[in-house]
Length: 264
Image 1 (tube, one colour):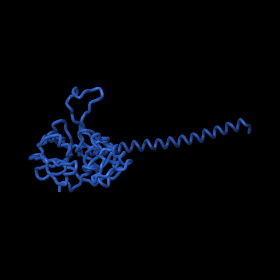
Image 2 (image 1 turned 90 degrees about the vertical axis):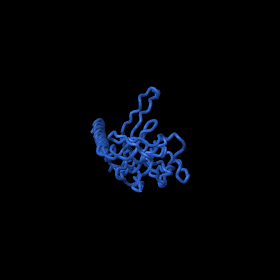
Image 3 (image 1 turned 135 degrees about the vertical axis):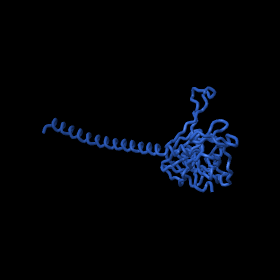
Image 4 (image 1 turned 90 degrees about the horizontal axis):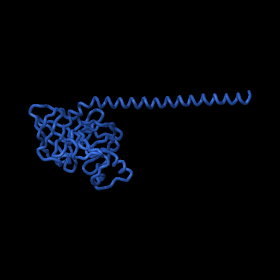
């Protein structure tokens, strides 16, 4: 075989190998794409299944300025109990106005509980003589990388080219945001913050539910990522997290775990 024939044979062999390699890469890429699409569909299905439950157990807490969220967690006779953040009720006056998913508004009073005094959590109680409302099923403390939903009412923020005075009154929007658990601390931060998660919670969602994939309540939203007020990343015992952990804390939203014993 002459040199020219050898060259063409080598070239054909190279093209053949390159084609096989490309097909393998394309197959792998297609598998990844199909896997991603499948995962996205699973998430959409979970959200669709849990959306009615999330909406039914969520209340809007109307404040002097704006609003926040809360979760229906228990019922005793005609009395219903809501868990929300302690910092939420500091933005209003008793009795608090709470609005259920059906648009009805009730007056709610604080139910004092000694075990919650050092946590950013409080219980509100309202009376409903005629209506019956769904209360949340409580779940276990989640684990790192668990899928979770962050639920609550969001507030519209002014854009760069807008003045707050020019905005129309804030209209609450009910949101169900997907994400996963990034951290579960062995010991909580001050105010009981213990569950870090990637869901991008915003103003108005404070006190709303953190649900697992089964629709069980595992915590309540308490603090958005990149907190700008004070230094909340300090443990209850006043020790400071190591720098590498602190960086991850800052990037995470934070919630307070809820257990069946909260109302006992």
